[in-house]
Amino acid sequence: MLISCDSGLDSYVILNLKLIDTVKEVYGCFGAYDVIAKMESDSEDKLKKSITQRIRKVPKIQATVTLMADNKNDFFGKTLSSDEREVLDIHSSQAYVAIDCKRAKEDQVLRDLSNIPEVIEGDIVIGSYDLICKVVAPTYNDISDIVTKKIRRMENVKSTTTLNLIPNR
Image 1 (cartoon, rainbow, N blue to C red):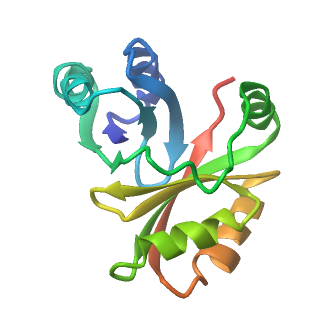
Image 2: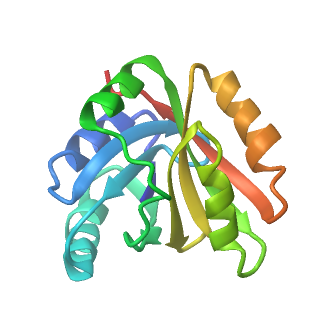
């Protein structure tokens, strides 16, 4: 879920979102949105209920964009342990990249993304974008290079929106 909130109140929104059981990860970000939240549930109804009855009622949230991913893909075998994720959270710059693809080319782009070592997650989504992926690198300049020199140059990618994450420290 991509979230816009009142200026300067992203920390308040993040603290409130962390109290919601379906929210598994939440970060402040800079880019087109203020906060990004990764949600998971065993039921689509439970997710919808969390969104409508909890998240959209958090004071200071102005707007949300929900991207629904089908958890059937395991991003071509890439999985990280909690220890690996913790190391990345501490020592790396991270961003989510929302991608618009050429029509019916989402599977190919997802396969191509899985060949980029810095891309650690990827999902086909339903919503305003076709795919979303998570990129890690030593610096935000490195992320910019990955997006511009690798992701945007893919044959079937039309456009990207990069959301650089603010570390939760």
